Length: 421
Image (cartoon, rainbow, N blue to C red; front, top):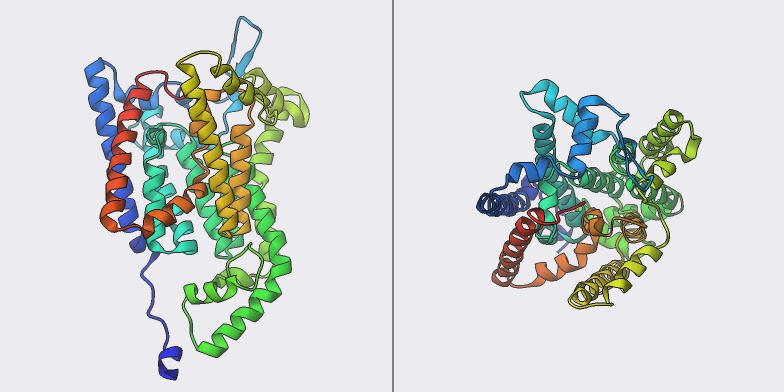
């Protein structure tokens, strides 16, 4: 019996190999969505590639990539739509793709989206696997792929790029790689305004680590001395019962204080740097970016405008059905987040998800954009992923197949109609 307890655990396969089934499943779902979009668009006489790369925000990103900042549109009502509202990392990557390959800026944006979506899928798997195991990681990736607005993951938008940076930053936090977490958080802050959610996760984790570090070290020491060499999962399980949720006792959990401080210092540099640059360019100081957003009639009002929008939908039929669906969707999102709290998701994951949900649901404009703005809040899918992972394989596969088909059809219908503003 002692021999069994003290025997070293077999080495785990590399993360990329463990994630391979999830990445293959994700790619298959995205190919299905693109194929349905191509067929639907051909039947309507439209270009699927144009829908993916040359409409709505994609045009603004491509214009910044080709000409830099400085373009604005003045509307008859006095609103000013400035390209300064769009963060620079995606345009920079589009410019890089255009420079190193025979690609237009739109084509480069499409390539970035495809690669970033795969990176996002890998990051989601890494976080979910670390918390709940490989099967839950696979299910989390597939659920993210079959979101009704999942086609946005293949568009020349910044959602996939941001989600990839956010997911891998969270994984770096959970595994104690502080400098990596800070660098990725800084890049996320150069991608979208919601980058502050990643910064908040890194900072909360850093602060929590000061109080939980000694406990973590003592627990890991007791576990390893009692049972010999243990796997990461064994140590993680022993640790969960005696600590407040926050950090998993990964190999980097005992990182030196300077590395933690460096990671925390790096995290806000991307978002803060861009916001300050916009303030200097506009001459409005630190509030310059907020005024740029105000020109788009976008801001944070605690959800008041969104509540009025939803309430207005109940004044007629069939728009009342859409209003009811929105209410159900918001309640479901909140319920899933609270389930994550009940299931003791780590503190940085909960903080990240909460900030993404708050910024998306409480923005004062662009109500049609909220489904895609919520897409980076992937941890809300973890309770569903755990339930799907516990189901019979055949039943789980059937659920994913049906959801993938519905998402592909809806994505084609959506992009050939109103689309994501």
